[in-house]
Length: 276
Length: 347
Figure 1 (tube, each protein chain N blue to C red):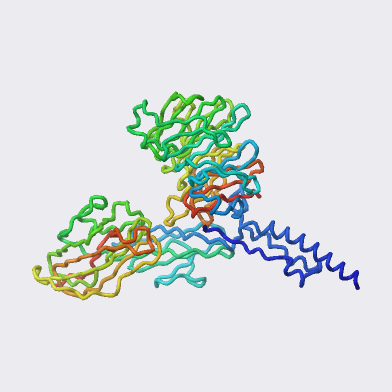
Figure 2: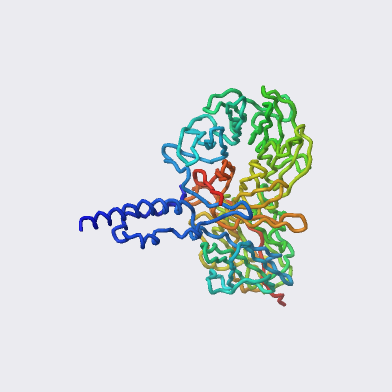
């Protein structure tokens, strides 16, 4: 019996040593399951749809499958599989995510399409453009062009003070809603819109405030994204006065805490029907 | 610190249940789940534990460049002024540290002169190039080239890299400054200046790295990265532009020649929308990209390389690579959360 115990112990010690070494050797390396895929790369022609647009999604890594949703939710392993270029003719939001049998799935990548809004006859700035980021000048917000994540691409106007403009449609229209496009890039001190106020005028002279809508986004961690506020209006009008305020005091978690943030906007889209 | 912590399960702790050799298979880690990055002939396993140190005792900020000295030691330059130079053995064990005066320590190049190792350090905050012995004694300091008329003040000179010829002459790339390439003799006297900021063939946007290419011994040339332009430019030693090699999508830092190949850390993928989109890139003796660890497989279509970009979130901002005599790679990263170098073992 004594010998058996000794043998078992020897076997144990031997196997411990051997396997410990093997384990350390193999476990030194990063395992696939610990690593996340990057987001699929999304290429779109234009996100403001005049006639049509399209999306191409890609992540060329073996066994990767890209899935997407059209309801704004994050794709799951059962969502629609992306196989080929998607043609777009209506407004909507497409969300893509990449899956792989061995790697962690990617984050999601979202792109929103907007129907082209109506033309603005006169766009009058009440507050000046910032010299550093004037975009394409006064018409930047109504030129039917959206910006990219690159805030220097010329399609963005950047301000550090409230931005006020009056929009004159010349004729009376039925304005269904307004979409205000903005950028978030906290590394560059670009934060979401803090406040929006809108007033409308039916006769072109007297303005009435439109009641504020849902609470605006507040971000709690660093991020970079394109976003949009959709504001229902449903009024007959000739003119609109829009005031957009930037974040006046950057939150505590950010290195710029207490300072005013940049506000970057690329496009205001007026979804309307011509009315008599 | 944003490093993965491994689960070091104690094998012996569970040995009480699994003592017999017939169970020993249960311990063997499933080898083929190891991440293998890269393509074709250049593929690697990844070791994130290599070289990790106590950040309170031996801290790093950006790990800018990394080289191997004549003794086989791995020498890394960080801009942390508690210990600008960190010297490891190949197993990742700390051997020594030195240097407290290089706040903009960026370029690190080995020069072997009569069997003795020297280092060329560029410092973009001191606006200087400093030559030291391998243990940190300064033997030469080069200031901004005021006499050339190309610089209004020393602040415009932010050198990022050097390369040294056998005869002691050396070249400096002013990659964060006015984008000139400066050619000095072994005493540090300026012989030539060329390049400059611009988009012409012989100019640069972010002349970040430079190295001597003597793979063709009869015709040594210079390889200089134009990082923002995603190009590697070839120049004669007397500063004439020869040709460019396009690497679409890849912000290549500095060329490192080992054997017949050129290795690069790629700071980021040009078209990535996220931070930390870097990877590595390897060219063969024909200067064609053959492997991109951490990124898309290099594919040539009609003689042009398709855009490269990161596929997995492994590297953040790789800034330099060093290749040891076994073909393993050591990767230093900029702005990666004060992480130490990563070792890649060639498979």
